[in-house]
Length: 203
Image (cartoon, rainbow, N blue to C red; front, side):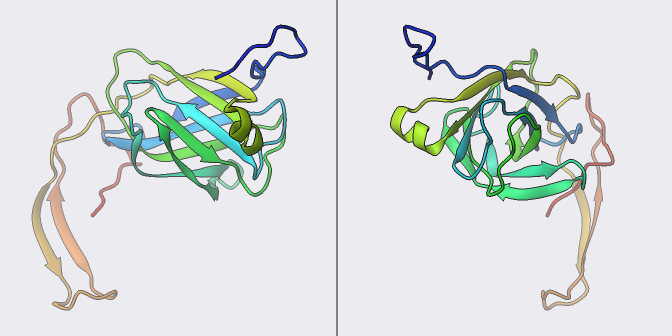
């Protein structure tokens, strides 16, 4: 995306001093997970007029995931902070709009992407993490900062067999907010993956 000028002063090469580190949580048998990006901008603050473009390795789904949500993660409170709008800009590329409170230059922030379709891959590839602002992108479609970040090889991402549901019961025939739903099920025996405390079953 960068167009390089003929001199140092006219060069449009994105700033490469920013840092980006990738991590994946929920190391279990789920086929949908979360990818986090710890980013330290070096050129400017990343705020409400900011954009982030993240290209995923091509062993991911071209649509990246389903019903994805993005947020800043508060590492001190250990909880999600501001929810950020994100969508698939084009195949394998996620666009994230900046937060209302600017993330300061030279300070690391963690961006989490939930709902990413996971897979089993033989060799880890690289993410491309780019920052820009809405004005520059609208006029030139260029990034101001860019860095590649290696995908992690920690854990095995694979789907488990179907859960065997043995019974379902309701506390009332009228399914309302106060009705309890009790489900009994058997977890399948996993292969090459393990159940972890962070696993959950959704209905």
